[in-house]
Image (cartoon, rainbow, N blue to C red; front, side, top):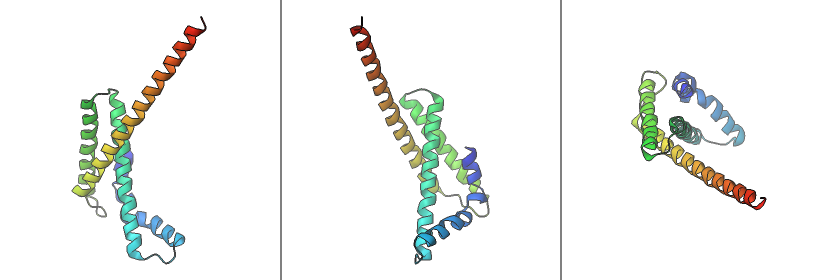
Length: 143
């Protein structure tokens, strides 16, 4: 959450991140237009929103340590509330803007993060059961 809060300041505003993305794109494709750079920068920044809230929601879910649908919903709500607070905070930073659109992107990222976490967690549980079954079978055969 500290990373998100610091990123909401002027430090990671569009003005500052364009100092890295623009030169990189010009090095990669020297004839790239300013409009293309602006579009790519927007996509990169929105993907960063999506990713950071996917991770945040998965961490909220893991912190609660329960595996019920209610807890999944709580993790989503926590991430959504933090997204709204983050955008509210950005509205006070001169070089940033807080938008409902970004809150929706953040919530989509939270949902994606929770789905991925559940899939990985479910796969891990299935593999653990299989391994436990194999170990029990092997132990029974060696007697």
